[in-house]
Length: 356
View (tube, one colour):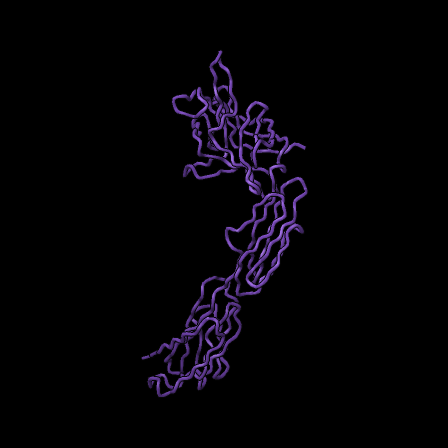
């Protein structure tokens, strides 16, 4: 009956080669001829070729996993591993057999890759020059490049310094810091934009309500203007509705429900207030879904081309998205339930285009 013995060689991943020797007297009688003289069984992340030397030529040797290639040259076994692009350390067994079919196994290990720019460290800033130091550890050589000459990067050990020059173009700009190593790529986004970059006139296209409550696509004139206070702005639709919104440098506008956008006198001394609401993107005659309140919002965000796009700010429903907006009618300046008088207007799936 064929038998085998496992020899597990615990070798630190950082050590490329560890020699060990065994005395034939230490092995069971059936393993005679499978004496290991020296074993290099630990690979670094890059890989390469290590050796296992036997006292005599074995009949057969192979690895249990395809990432390790075994070549037999007399009593020397050449172990070859490619670069491990997984962050996980990987292990396999080297199986060595004699002519009787008896076998021993050696554990072979290769460390995983450490590579990448830190998550959550994208740079969102106003138009001023800025610099930031990031910690980016790696156990492989890394090359850093940028997508624009206004971004520069310098590596010193595990520190990566990113410098961004002042933005005097009058518009938002978006770029990337890119890290490359052993065929892998990672990136970090850089957005530089101030409120002044977006002040101006726009055309908005959106689905709006008809008299029969159906929707059809129509256009509106939009103007964005700076308001009193740091990063405060007005989003003005058709020169009738003024929505007070907040600008977040490098990110865009946060547009919150519960804001009075217009006040109309419906009879002497009696007023109706149009108040901003967050609207579902699938708003329809059959499903007129809008959220009254003062805590929900949508984003008028900066896309990769530096343009403004409406986006959902938070997940409000599992099966719906909310990146549309509108106004509801109230008899009070606050969106309280008893003061609700109906829908004023909606702008479903809105899109902005800057006028030249």
